[in-house]
Image: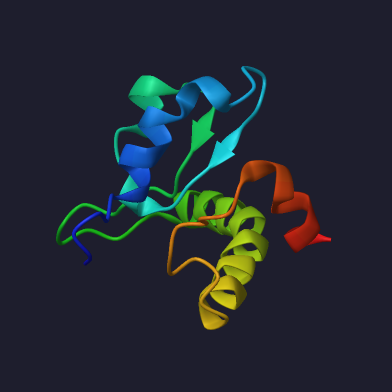
Length: 100
């Protein structure tokens, strides 16, 4: 982890004001506690140690993960091309030129 690395959940908390109030957030299991700060959030349920999830909870997890997988694939592609490996250093007004 680099010196300036910050966990995704911490970034989420810092930027919570940018999320429209009527939006749902689908997150992974790394976001434990997200519901406490944003009620319209859904994360897969973790099985307790030594226990298995019942079929209904597994179905719930599958439904959440089906909605997340497309975004996860985009992140994977961006990382492949190292787009996310550094901070974008150009001026914001030129950002549109880079993303067309």
